[in-house]
Length: 169
Image 1 (cartoon, helix red, strand yellow):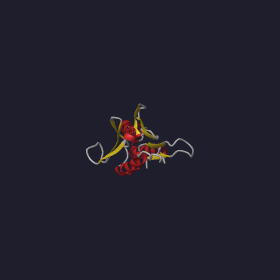
Image 2 (image 1 turned 135 degrees about the horizontal axis):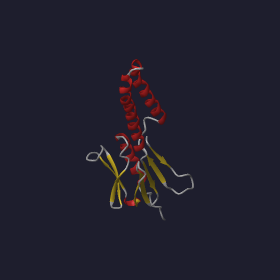
Image 3 (image 1 turned 30 degrees about the horizontal axis):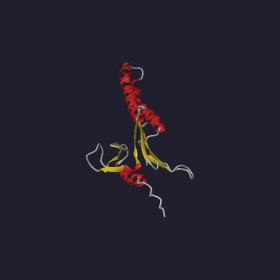
Image 4 (image 1 turned 90 degrees about the vertical axis):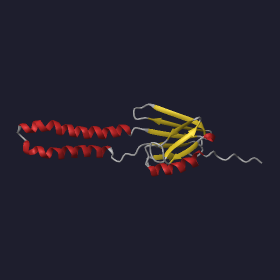
């Protein structure tokens, strides 16, 4: 899953952190191989045209097509720089979202008042997941698949539940 919980080391503060990122199905090596294979395959029709003027007429359009493939794939990698980090402390929830262009959005609220909500319909995606608290409602994990958001909803609900108060006797 494109998210990971990190638990605190023994003896440390009982903070819990959730990191989320968009799924990348094509690693950088695969990206390079795909662009190279596209270039190699797109040049096959040019071989019979070697030494003719027609080659120079077609070549710019074929290179433009390879450039378009490269640009489109690179744009998806730029959008994948998105990161969300949810930190859960005994008293507070803090969500920090780093957008693909580097700008940062932050949200924080008291853990006691925080609620995780699943919106099966009506959101930008099916089973839209939000955190509510501190007078605001923010989305979390909108880039996850529907099944991943369903699983995350249960995990978040369990994680933000305030710890039980110590018994005094």
